[in-house]
Image (cartoon, rainbow, N blue to C red):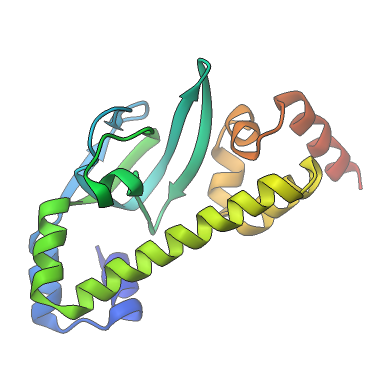
Length: 191
């Protein structure tokens, strides 16, 4: 939990009592690989901070999984559109490998917003980062070649994600065929 404290201290500068209030609302959870934290069609009621492990969000399109986000150690994850709007999710949130997370309920988050402007700032920062991620991803998908997408992915994403997410999931995330990704990876390793 010290990593979460340090991240929040850097982002919003917490007093000891603010941290105690925040941490009292957290629930430490251990999940096995393949656990579904949110099914498509249900409302997201939790925000997660990943202490250790690997998670993803994805949706189904014509029966195919389209990966939309990956998170690992020291990162936040949820289906933010559903969490914010409290409407049914179009995505599924799944644990890819055994993971330990800290769970904060939507209700607790709203209570924190009402008690301190620092927590409202945290919500704004998370929303802004999520928005910038979506804009960057949209621009990448629309303007980059398959090779450029992969090079950008390995440059910008945590090494754990690059190395441990299955190749077919990365291909789906990048909007390219698994065979194309395999060819690109071979080409990059040769040069």
